[in-house]
Image (cartoon, rainbow, N blue to C red; front, side, top):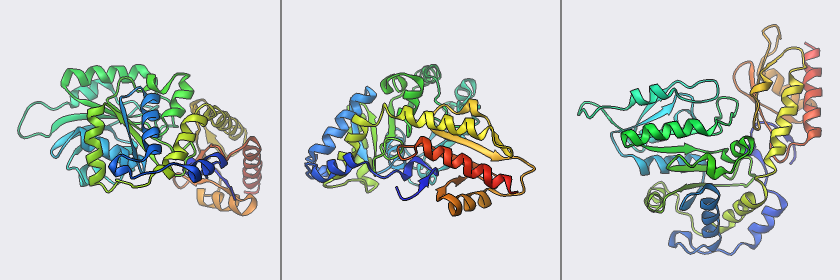
Length: 348
């Protein structure tokens, strides 16, 4: 890459193997179901998640929205974490495009809604109320340190859903980060949810795309929803080819990203003027902030990092930051980041 970019794992460029696969990909018209590379990707994604079928979509937001609109309809309600990605960062799509009412609940320090609150939020059969239809969960939980939520939580959510006839969808944008951190197969992480969307274009390094997985009947319905959202792509095998490299070559190496994030967290903890909880760093996301006595803002810091070392960092508020490790971040990049940041703060 042409910079050291800690802003997100979405900034990753495709690897040389991905570029080669894209150039050589067999293609067809995917709307007709005739693109062999897309079909191969969808089958592999389903196998990796232990689901019956998969659907290649343009983005994680499209995958989540397609899932929500497949599970629920106008006037239905979705129980969701108040700081989850589907509620905060997807343009209100479930409400604006689906007429589905979000019912946000608080989450704990790692992103779990309280189980008793979930059950208490299920509506009674009353014509004055929306119909509870869906529980939305997330793993890893982006807003809470990218924490990999243990699977016993989802088993308990599943029990509530079954008791009340609800579906469960997981935003698994960084599903494989969670699986690697939990030291288990992704299929084990998602065994208690009806559907899951995961991103190919984050830690897995592909340039475009996500995959929605679930039962064959669910994916059949979701394919129609995807079409209504403008997501029917034609010779999409050129994109899917990179996703195949992601699933075949990029999952195990996510452990390197986690190690670099831990290196970064431990180093930040040693810099005067930085406040961080390194024990909360379990995957590739690192959240930290400036101490109260530092006379700078996050904008000042990010500007200095760019000017001094071509290091790009995302501000997460006026005095807060999020740094993300990914394929294009090395141990040496982390060291340079720490040295440069320490020097910037020493001059204040």
